[in-house]
Image 1 (cartoon, one colour):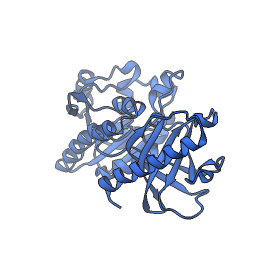
Image 2 (image 1 turned 180 degrees about the vertical axis):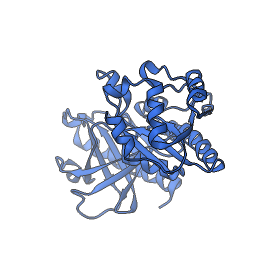
Image 3 (image 1 turned 30 degrees about the vertical axis):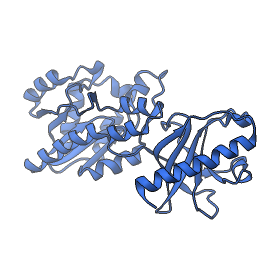
Image 4 (image 1 turned 120 degrees about the vertical axis):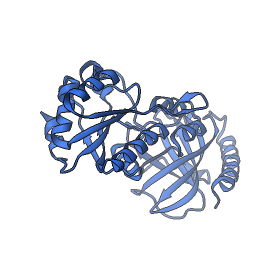
Length: 310
């Protein structure tokens, strides 16, 4: 059994308190739960651990549904480490995993990770057909000998913070709402690949970014952004869309980096979206597009300079 093999690689020699879930985005709701986990583990002289999944279980249970991720596994692990988690255990969710009962899955956590408690949200459920809900886990806890701590959700402006809510805000291009729910600006990373070279001809050379195809992207449009290159931050503008003025079909991510000189091909760039300036639109001429780009850069630099400084 794959889950048994993967858990065996992380066998603990000390008792653990665990949280289980995808934790996509590691948003403010996740951070609140993790803080309770870490604090309780310290009080009980145990290790804090997060069991996460390499892909969203929905991709296995409902393969016709494509669920873009907010943070890939590497970024997720980094963010969880920043919250003080001692152990991070990534599991591959398979059809076999989905058939495990809550009892059997918990038994594996106890066997390999010496789990003495689990910290969950009120709507949490695990195991076959999500039968391992709060009440069922309470019963299992008394049977198998582990505690169950239920942490209430985080509510901001009347909205429960969730990965689903953040994905929707991103799809709407509302990067302010994303920041409010996640506790940080949305960012993505990718390598620079060759493009059509139109930006340079217009006086605004752009880097064509190739993010992971499964990465969630903001709505099409032009954004004031911050680009991280080789450990340095630059003011930038990022365009997401199909470049309708030129009749392109493929959705692309293009970045104009203010005051940057040099070849970026092959480099990895991390882009943080600060504010959406406008929707993508089709212009009647290249001259009209160039005029709009000049205005976009001027406005974007003013916004970025005011918010994050230069």
